[in-house]
Amino acid sequence: MKNTFGYYTIGWFISVLLFHLITFLVGGNLRPTLDAGFFVGYVFILIAFFGLILIAHRVFNSENAQKLFYRIPLMRIAKVGLVLTLLVGSVFMAVPGLPAWIGAVICLLILGFNGISLLKASAAADIVEDIDDKIATDTAFIRALTADAQCLYTKTTNPNLRKMCKDVYEAVRYTDPMGHPSLNFIENQISRSFDAFAEAVSQEKEEAAGALANEIKGYITDRSENCKILKAER
Image 1: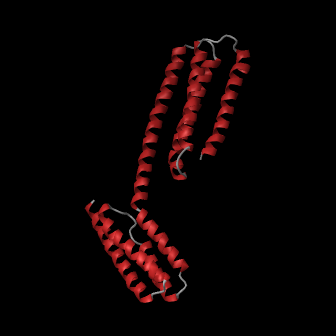
Image 2: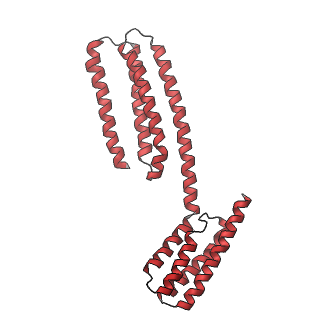
Image 3: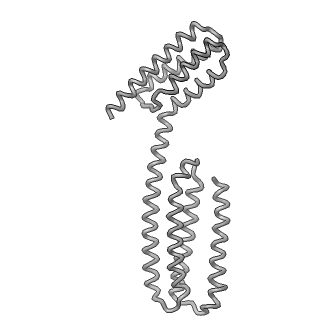
């Protein structure tokens, strides 16, 4: 992500440099006298450019690809604001005699609407990210247990034990992944039983492993029933 921002910064710097070259080399020959309208357009265009790089810093420094995806609309909004400011600002920079206050009002309106849109999009992205973080936390137990069960099933070669491991893996895999503080007790029981089950499988104690597998599946069923009750109460 940070490398992407570095490349974007290079492109941004080149764009700002081209803007200045066109403004003062080409534009300077066409318009040797610079009035207030010119500087109004110039200042607001610079503000839009720097606003874009600040938004890009927030977007491309996202913690992961998912959060980057949620923040992409910020870039689109900032680019639209820059384009509109460039169009209005360029007119006031190129045409002498235009009232500077009109240019300032128009650019301020663009800046204001753009700022409001960015705040709304940023708030929406933050809300979705918070929901994702909460879901990741609430589903962490089942996801970790599923990975452990799959690993145990993959490693086991004994046919009878392998079938038990598969049954446990499928029971865990297809259960409701959402967690809740009230489920902590039963989840601790599942963890202890699974650890004992994994040890029995590694020692190829089929009878003990079979009893523990049934115990785990029973706990999983109880947990699923509790999940249904909790969802019904919400």
